[in-house]
Image (tube, rainbow, N blue to C red; front, side, top):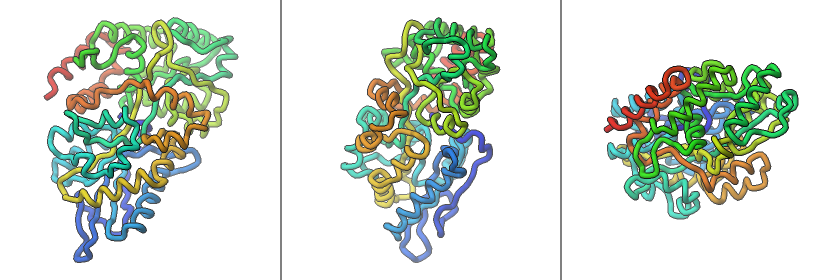
Length: 418
């Protein structure tokens, strides 16, 4: 799971941000100088508007500032795009090149292998105490916290007001029937993608979950049992398949990533799309100004919840650098770094102090308001580390083939996962 992908970058980009890195994939000490080098792997959040290579620039700024205050600690950061980071990190660990710090979309799979520090070993109490409680709770496995929320977000429906006016649509949709009717009018008005539907590998699990929530479904039921092929979810994807077959969505949604669809929305080619605050810089960069933001339509009414999304940062315990990692984490959360991420990508902070600083931003208000009632992925179940990639790879087929069959195969994957 991620908040903003760098899918367009293709191959991984590697940054060595310190002047004396170890380069061996694990933390190391410099030769005889008493310095400790922390190896960090981070996901690439792409470019902010007018800020090419802003991911590289961001981390270089953080590391330079940290190292100026802590000359005995060097930090090497390797930035990898979202489509590659999970596989590359798995290979590193398999080869014994375990990083000290990892920032990505999931932590749970590493817990069962005993690879992570507990949060209280690498984060000071005053910092952890400022975390949004509901979000921090999802960093726990069996009551112990291993994952530290890195950035957060929520989701809502964006709609192009100019295209709505052109199609004679007076109000944004609140129900699936209204959504279908609006999409039909947009199509008649010549809009090529009435509803943007990204079900490609970048983030199919998020788009799918939003639709499931609209019909009282989800990846698990109220008892915590996997329910990917529940009747509600099958009905949801049958409805979505109908939209696709009627030409009311992005063509071939199983092959389309959200960044592409968001860029199309910014270019005025899409009438409606689900998105988050991190979509706003993409729309701004494209020059789109006249859009509205409302709760996502559900089957019978607007969602009374939203997808609460957060990415994670975590510390591996192999290299014995807990003290140095704690200094870096405390610096990150108490300084300007977390705020700079929000400024660059319109992502939301995970601390009460950070949220308070953003409370006056009108563009972010719908999302800040939605966070308290958010629904989340089943992060705490170690099986999510297996189920999540499977969803990304195959759930797009549920709007092309038999929804019950595609969801049934994912259900089997969840039940069989170790």
